[in-house]
Image (cartoon, rainbow, N blue to C red; front, side):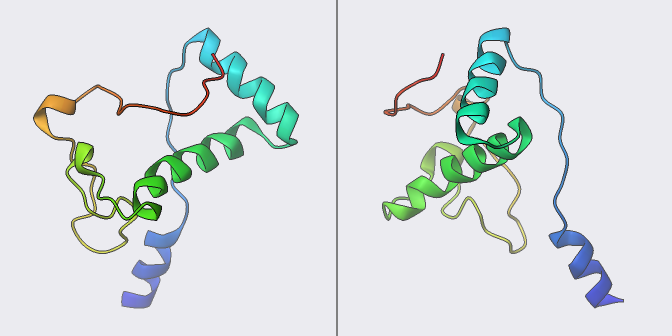
Length: 96
C-alpha cells in the first residue's frame, strides 16, 4: 500500500490558471518557436524558475524555502506574508 501511495504522489499534477491576453499570446508565440505545446512550455518555465536559485547556490528566500523542488514532507508553497500575490524580481528578457 505504501508503494502505491508513493507512486500516486509522483504523478504529474494538473492546475488551472488565468492569464492575461498578452501573457497567453507571448506563451503561444514562444511555444510555436520552440516546437512545444503551451502546457509543456509553462511546466518547463515554472520548473526553471523554481530551480534557478538552487543552481546559483542561493535559497529561494522570497518564498521562505531553501529547496523549492523538495520532494520531502513539508514542501508546500509557503510565501512569506509580504510576498503573497507578488512576483520575485526578474532579470531575464520578457516576452510581453
